[in-house]
Length: 237
Image (cartoon, rainbow, N blue to C red; front, side):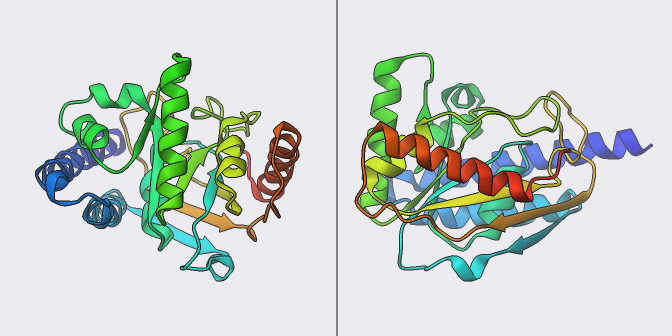
């Protein structure tokens, strides 16, 4: 019975996502800045968490200045990281996602034509274009969310970080917020279609300011700082 309820929660989450994507697709021509897109995304996130029995705790919001753009750099353990972050952080966040998600009917189309940023890691030119798009959105007042590990963890442990998120932060010249997500892995592990209720905790560290520094060495130092900050709070899942 528990497994069946978990699958029904998954189906409900899919339906909610499809309805939200349809609304977003209709609105795209009238929403050049992506503000309505993000508003619908926040409603989608709150409803999805509620229907799936997922509670949310957030620590560190006092570190965030609503008038400043940030690059949020997070670990990635589950698809539920996304609604948790969108619901939990009151900022105009634009998510950088894998291009493969655009193949999903309706949901993927909303991503493709909406305010978020798809990245094709297998094609260098496309990746560069996506990075430039992320930087442009930051310069126009939005914040960006990237997953430093590049993909979801297979075993619940923190993986090595990739440099892309830190390249964007250094190029854009904005502060980086280390963001730790705990508790999401057990709610929906990779390759699972059954949702388990639980609690997701978001922990935001103080923003790291770059002070005008640039270059590869700065990116690598930043990557080490953020990895250390997330490791401090991360609980192997």
